[in-house]
Length: 349
Image 1 (cartoon, one colour):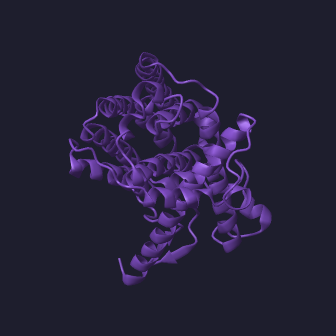
Image 2: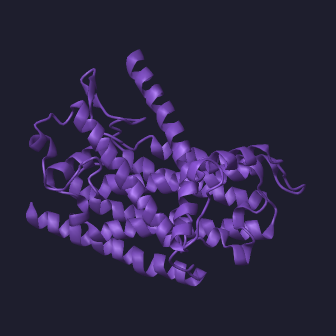
Image 3: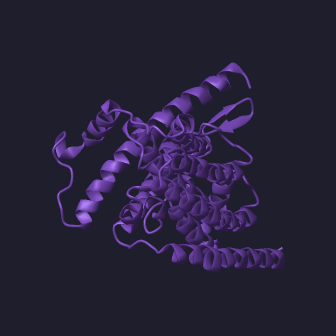
């Protein structure tokens, strides 16, 4: 890798990390606004026009709050847990291709991504999903609080259970696309149609497991307020709590972007249509790249809206219901989807 390539990746990484943090902060505001709309309330409207500066006020408030650590807590792991949580979220963003390739350097095409054209991007996403459980589990254990510990244990069991179904749901997409590279999977969908038409069951499973992996209602058992006071983050305050809270929304946006890339054609505007040919433009031309990036972002934030919509619509599962859904319904369904997909591909070839 020469100096120019390294510089491009560093600049892209800086831009994407800052955009991710800003987007996550404003997703909190979006959550409050959408919840108010669903419940026929007004929502935040005091800080700035239409409440648009509320996120900045929340961040400043958390930054200025005292960082309180319980006397019996393990300080090192108590401080490490939020770092792991936000670090995992940032790492997932590294492999998301937000635009099609638009520049060629050294014979390699690059798009807007921190780690462009990574051959094992899908495996990185699944690996980071597995590592993410450590942040929540350590937060609960290191607090030396029985409610926090229970939230951490619930989260560990929940995330480990549902990541099996998530990984198996992606296998069908990989079989259809023949690659673990997200850019190649999107380009395959542009050529042959979106995977939602070929793998609808896989998309449904992935979306449900994404809700569980991000601890969103109706799977928010790790932080169930009526039972656990606040769950794994009960003993957190200040920016440590802010990082845990921010990591949840960062993971929601990352999950939405991965769903858009795997099943909704990524930066492709419409399925089964060659938009570049209709407009008389090259796929790598600046207008097509900008349009595609806007389409990808619109798809991701549309899925974020669905995440928020579900939270304020469905009640929380009981813990036995949550486990039964993961092990008795989603896991067998994902295995059946792989078997049927493999048989169909074998017959067609």
